[in-house]
Each structure stands twice: as structure tokens, then as C-alpha cells.
Length: 442
Image (cartoon, rainbow, N blue to C red):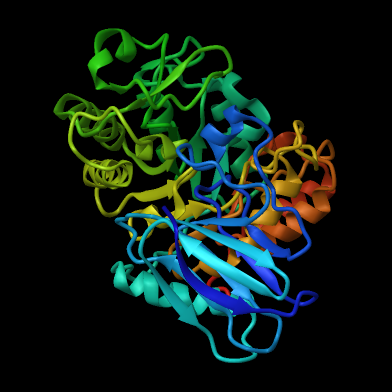
């Protein structure tokens, strides 16, 4: 049951409502009052890319843990927000009626009012300063630069592909610190220590990366388990069966790993401890919204509590010096627990999302969220807008390079480096010289 927390008088032509989505890929932006907010195109998209347990209304604005109203009258922006990253994280609703907006929430929230004349982004940034301080966010470490295998090779990457691009980094004199092995090295989703037939030895490729003077990075979806995996077959009791993140990887059911079960927690420690012992010290953890899904857990904990416990387990396993990048992550529950955060959907080689859902890979969706969450940079973490893809096959690539330059503190390339044309190579070289170094201010 939602309780009314405020009624705000607005200028209907000038007012804006800012919706903050649940996780990295959930659409996040500010709307005019006569605009229709973005909603999932299917239930599958809602479960995997929005807040799985909630369905946002079509006829009202809706923020997960955070919503803001700029009344457009010159008066202060109202920021309505969860009280703690540890939860509970309420859903916040804003309904427009004439020249008034009624805000309600299904849990306790804090309300901050900015000074008169303050813009929406500035109001959100000032609120974030206080939220980050309360969560104990300390000084942020400068991020490394990276090369990532995903956006050229996708799940078909081979050990030879990694070796080729490692050599190309030196040949092209690119300022890349980390070589990140993305999805495709593992035998199945969940079987992170078993290799696909495309990789002979993870230890050997890590040694080669380090021997070339680079750092080794790896992609893991730690809270997802595919039905074909050894893990699912041998430990079905570790899985959250009634909170499946949906179908399709692309052709199997997925379940969530329940890290509140001792065996599952120890498995997570083994996976990340093994990677760390191999010499990997950069970790991209993806699809981690699955760790916060409600229901079916062994312990009497909420999804947010289980999720935060899982992130702490990972941090303990990799150590304080390793770099941790979150993706597909519940945003507010992650504050204070990662070094960097993907703030939008995946970039695509295409501009529009293929199914029309703005939580899906595309330049339009990635750019929208990167701008809508720019204020988080330097406060919650280092913002990751996503990789630079700069080859001539990328639609409107110049526009995406501008988004990366303006919004991303973490800089990574994800092309086959030897295939870059003159513009792509020059742009990659320029943007890898360093990301944003100060908190976003507008």
C-alpha cells in the first residue's frame, strides 16, 4: 500500500519528472509531464531488465528507490529517495493531475529539496553526495583502461583471439592496462572454472597477458546458473527456483544462485579466489540483478540483503586491491560495494534497440542512461557508459564516441584492433588516454 508523501505545484510546460530505473539497463531519464515513460515491451524484458517483482504503471511516473520532480516554477527540485543502500528500496510513484504532482511510495523515503533555481542534475548530485557519505563511500581509485573481447567476438571468442589483440595493443601503441576476457571462455553459465573447447588454458593466457606488461581481467555472471551446467545438475538446492531471470542464453533456462546457502557461498569464494590466484585482478561481474531477486532463499533475508552479502563475498575473495566493475546491477543497493558501475544498457552496433525496448543493447539506450546517470560519477563510483566501439560497421559511431568522452570515467575498447580504420584507431587512441577525473557537475 503506497502512502502519499508530497503534493508538488508545477508549471505544466516546464516541469520535469526524473525516473530512476532499478538496475544498470533499466531506462533512466527525465520526462516532460505530457511524455509517456518507457516501459518494458514484454514480461521477459521486465524480469531481466527492470525490477522483476514490480510492474510500473503506464499512466504514472515511477522510480525504483529514487524519483525527482523539478516543478519548473523556479522553486527547488524535490528528490525522493530510499534511506539506505541496504534497503528496503521502495518504489516511488508520481501522478500528474492538472498543475499538481502527487508523490507516493510503498515504503519509507527521505525527501530533499534543493535551493531555488538549482537544476535537476545538480540537485541529484548534491543528494548523491550525502547518500554516498552515509554509505561510507571512500576515495575512488583511478580506473585502469581496458580492452574487452565482447563486442567483436561475443560468446565465440577463442584463446587465439585474445592472443591476437594482446599483440595488437603493443603494435599499435595503445594505452591499455587490462586485457579482459569476456563471455565465452567458460563451459556453461555457472561453470566458471570449466573451460569451453575454445580455450586450452586460462592460466596460460593470463600468464601471457601479465608477461606482456598488462593486467588480466575476466567477465563473470556470478549469480546466474544455466540449466545445462554441472552446477545446476549437482547442486539444484543452491538455486532460487521461483525467481528465474527468464529464458534464453540464448537457448536454456536460467536460475539465480542463492548465496545465502553455505555451499553456494563457498563455491562463489572458490571461483573468485581461483581467478585471483591465477593473477587476475580486474573483474567485471554481470547480470548481478539475479542476486537480488526475491523469493525461495534458504535464509530469511530480502533479495537486497542477499545481493549485498554476495557482493561482499566476492570482494573478500578477490581482495581490496582488485578492481571490481558491476553491470546489470541494482543501482542503489550497490553503492559502496563496487569500484565502477555500468550505468546503462549495452552499446550496440546499431542505434535503435532491435525490439524497441530501451533496456536493450543499442546506442540510443546506452546514451540515454549514460546522460541520465552522469551525476553518479565520482560520487557512488566511476561511471562506465560501456565500451568504445569505433569500427566503420558501427552506426553513428561518432555520436557514441562523444558519449564515452563526456560520460564515462572507465574507458575500454572492444573492437578487433587490427581492423580499425584511421578514424577508429585515432579515436580509440585518444579516448584511452584517460576518462573523467572529477565528479560530474552541470
